[in-house]
Amino acid sequence: MPEAELPEVAAIARDLIRFDTTNHGGGRAAGEREAAEYVGAYLETLGLQPEFYEPLPRRTNVMARVPGRNRDKRALVLHGHLDVVPAIADDWSVDPFAGVVKDGMLWGRGAVDMKDMDAMILTSVADLLRAGEQPERDLVLAFFADEENGGVEGSALVVRDRPDWFEGATEAISEVGGYSIPIGDRHAYLLQVGEKALIWIRLVARGRAAHGSKLHDENAVTRLAEAVAALGRTAWPVTLTDTSREMSERLAELTGQSAGDPDAVAAATGAASGFLRSTLRTTTNPTGLVAGYKHNVIPDRAEALIDVRTLPGTEDATLADIRRIVGDGVEVEIVHQDIGLEVPFSGDLVDAMVAALGRHDPGAPVVPYLMGGGTDNKALAALGIAGYGFAPLRLPSDLDFTGMFHGVDERVPIDALVFGQAVLTDLLRTY
Image (cartoon, rainbow, N blue to C red; front, side, top):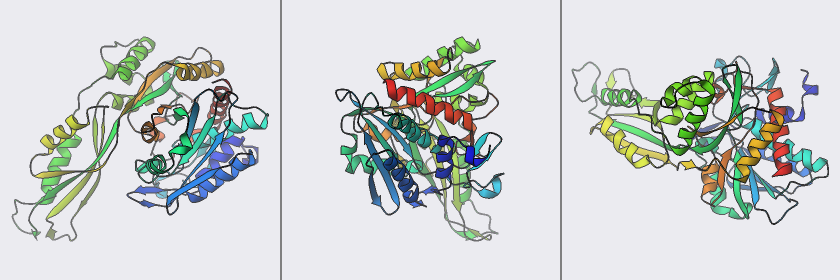
């Protein structure tokens, strides 16, 4: 498809990808300012008045409020983030920040996480306003910085310093839900109604520095390696929450598996199985190692980064288990910790999201799930706002969509973006 013929939703997603908003975490980020200014300029073309908040240099957040027809109804927040995780260009088949269009897909870092949803939010609102319509209720459109670092320099600061942005809002919609997964020769949609808690920890092992040629039993690297291997290979047990139990039961009906074996049920969902199996248990994945400064010097300190995701409410018990697993000789430092969420798969908003999907893909079942990762819904929860994941995409069965999150050659079908825009527009018109 020639770029000049791209649907607007794909063109906006492409433009956003071309802003390198890489976030390495820990305050090391390219910054979201130019992307936020692009979003603000687009909102202005719709007759809206965007507000910007930049609590730290280049970490820019932008918001606009769209008046609804019924001011008695509580406002709905639609939010996205503008930062992305790093991409090593040599690993990709395309430039990750070029917004390449090929094979009917838009390629680039952020294509699924989450500049696609940012574009869907913008164009869905544009559909209504350009037609001279209003949404049913006030909409708060928010685009945050720093989500890929837990929102520490983004949504957390916005909620702390600009809670007025969200006045009157009680519900929110954001990423990682509403997409289709293959179920045999049919498909179903996953609606995200919960998120695991995040705990980023650092393991620190100490020893005694020495010459690399020595017989040495106080090697910090060895101690760390043993702890990392023990924790990384821990088989955490399946533990069902209300959401994951309902997910397993509904998927069991669709797959023909036994609801008594949630792992087998999740495994029957094809490429989505790895994503869904992680929602059934705690995960502790090593993601970084730091040790040593010379090949022939045994260092006295070694560190590892572990990404821990726990089921809501199990954070303290999980940390106690981790300390037991790594042993007394290794320190466990908490780098960042947030909360887990779980909201009901019921109510007017859920009914409206399910109905909107049904109007555009009749007969496709919708299943609740607890996401293994996290979103800026956690920050909004501090304001009493219940958050859902609803970025609707009808996807081909052979696309490993969940594998695209933070993966190589991230891409999204253009027709899926068009579908998502239509579903979101329908929802905003009716809810």
